[in-house]
Length: 135
Image (cartoon, rainbow, N blue to C red; front, side, top):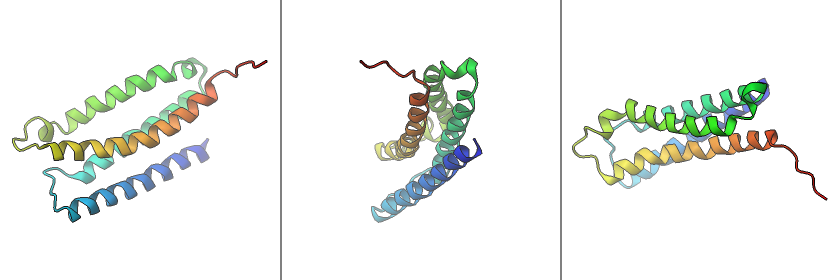
């Protein structure tokens, strides 16, 4: 159990570092400056995704929630988006000069972390699905 959580932690940290540094490098080469902290956006998505995967791994081992993990994941993705909008509402809703480029720079970290999050959750859900009888 601790080994799997360690794998989650290392995977998310590596992806967070690689994704953030790559994103920063591309933005600096294109001379694009964001009016928000890109680091905070990556940390939010990385921490939330890590917490989500860890909680799902723990819930997977409880009989009560094992069959509900797919539905819980859908709710958690909606919750993640809502919390993100609340935390970064100053930049999303009140910024006069919020450009399309800024919007894309907000979504890239979400997509990067969502990729690994879906990979781990999918792996977990496949374990919990019943084996079909093949003839």
